[in-house]
Image (cartoon, rainbow, N blue to C red; front, side, top):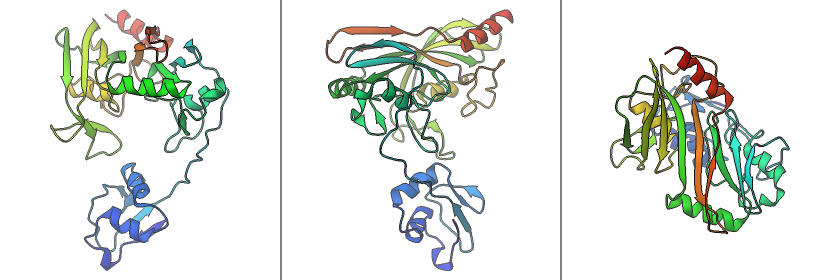
Length: 304
């Protein structure tokens, strides 16, 4: 759609004017579209609070609502552990965990539903069994609940921060010090709504990442990162805030080009610990580095 702002729209917030102009679409959905960069004013994406001027051209496309029913897709999963309540998989880089804006197929949720049809109805209809997620470019361990009891228990564990999650990351630059903690709030970046950012106290959710150096190279560092909280893009944002963006992360690192092609981020969820939601036993899972990151480390070690 292409609309021209009339004189009566001058000074009105973009989201409010658009909600009145496109009455068949909810304001919440329009706000989400604006935040995702899907609404352009005079050719540029902008914020929903932007005050309009008469004569400006507002362009956008309303995507169709996704189906509330997830269609199973039978493709291979790397299963690390499975019983009647829990499924632990090693997600490859490049796979999205559940359907979202612009992506309806090829997700881990759809593959898990084909693998274990009993998870239908566990949690949300578009993300059955999914209690946490990994970014598309991140590989590694992810737990899926196969029963409602398991889902409720795992969500509670995540909320109480008793699930242990350790990641391995290769970052740009030689990090100083042996270890440290980043305790900095994270919220959506007010300048670039498609990404997250460290924000002043009171303007974001508390986020805590513990890190320690495992190996140094001339221009890179292998780091272990342990999550205390689980915010969107937390490790990527926190490491970038230290001046050491994850290799392969074009969103948070202007210098993030990888020395070799790795097909995603140099970030891997390597270790996961949790209490079994029914048996109540402490469980620990480990996922070895994928070949793509082994090749990167081999390349860096050869350059020492």
